[in-house]
Image (cartoon, rainbow, N blue to C red; front, side, top):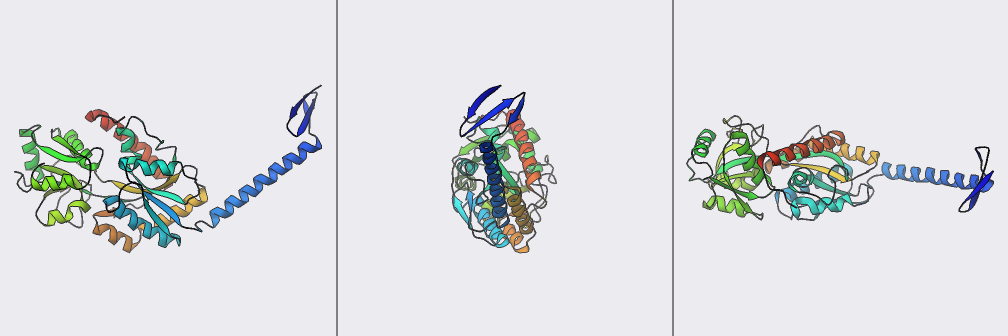
Length: 347
């Protein structure tokens, strides 16, 4: 027979069988009751969710395309959930600052964020390392909306359609430039176009903001791949010449503008998406509640009208499972793309 000590109790073992003392039995009963109490409290909290305002982080400054869409999403979720959704801007690093804050937040459903490709999928391919794991550190709820990008040129550029544009690029390799922000669709769009169509343009890098569009209108650069929301007014005013929609579908705002595939180039999907995500380990009941709210939102007529006014469209049918799978698949896609295009990776 041998004995060993555990704080507050003694366990005696005889012939390979454990004799539990009265003190240990009471201890185990207390632990069991505590577990039941905790589970009951957690279940009750999930059932009453949300019972206080939700913070919705946005990884970009106020007034930009992501912020505008985030506020539309926030208002819509507030209506569907019956609780205030407060948008909080934590701009910087392509949305990565906000993503890091959410990854370290308590998984109670009251800290969420508008997930985007630059922080969740392309970011993993364009950076050697991140301060969070874009797959393991988040609970993905659903994709909600996407914006379309347009291929536009300076009005004086000697091409009026995609066929002429392709012919000019092939006749002048490396002599045509396009401007954008590293890692954004304004940058990725030109690289992807070159890769798919075997052309070669030169990239002019900007810190961000409206300067790439201003320079394109002024003729400093010649080509741009910008979101419809940021350039619609310039296109309608004749300050930019549109050649195609960089998406599988046409834009209701420009119904006569062909998709890039219809226009004769290799089809491409350059549509930045916006989703809803939270910290890892969100309770299933809260995930289900948020999924249902998003499902209602993307079918809402008012919500879709608001999106259309800024060149965006809702994404129907996305859920937690499919969103998670999409993130894994897209990270692999962008990593291959970065390698194939020989894009330099940030530290």
